[in-house]
Length: 343
Image (cartoon, rainbow, N blue to C red; front, side, top):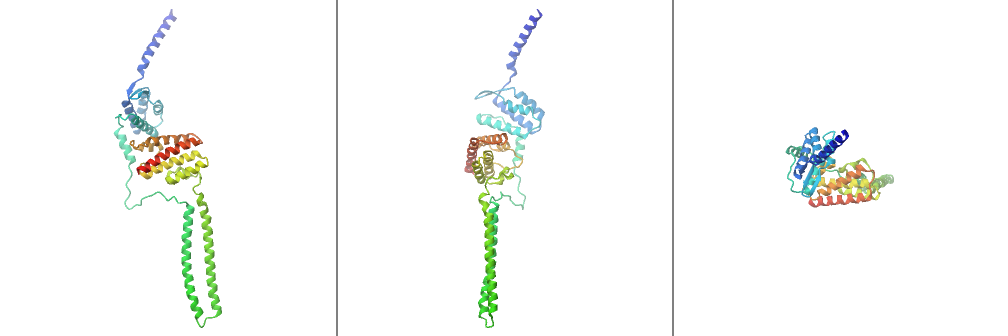
């Protein structure tokens, strides 16, 4: 009798839970979902991690009604926020990218981020004024070092020729006068001739030595853009955009596709720097650059896809395939062509 009563009670409890379970899943509008994401972004920006974690856990259980159908909240992103150890800037940038993607798909969304956060981002993006009397820093010349050395040696050689030419002219002007003098002896003429011969030999020797050194220094010039794998490859400003493209092609020919993908990504970044679309900052992450792009740019989704593919290939694997390289090259080329076309 007791077992029958307990079994009936358990059935009633299970029935109540099954009825109440759908009610536990909150349904919100797409507008409210974007507003909640914007609030999470604002809380992380103001370092209110505990509040952001609580709201992320609540939002993770919600379903969202959108014009394209019902979907569940991004539990992966919200789970990372709920379990975050600190208010990571990359989480803020991921939220910003998610909001921008939703607005691109559903342009009617009107929810906006916290004005304080917008002011903070605007202050970070502001370019400081140049100090009066200072010099404007420009991107250093990309001429190979060996080529610059060869040009310097050539300039020195031309200067030596000019000076020695003046000395030789002076001696040649002096020689006929000394010969025509009535008191000139054969020994004097031989001395002058020996001096002239010595100067000529010195000029020939210097010419051969300078040219030999110039050729020795200039020989590696054709190989200066060959893949070296130096630490400078990590700096986008170590090369110009066109030089990054050539470097990527050479890396691909050597089947170093992973490094070639990074070279194409740097070419896209440098093109954006040159056009003023992005501003270089050493501590900035790739997703911060994505968030800094204006949503009105037609090629922005292509840059997002390029960034996502680059990070997966560079940070997520030890080597890349030729298919991954071709995909990144095409996306980078699209970004570069659009940036140069709008410049």
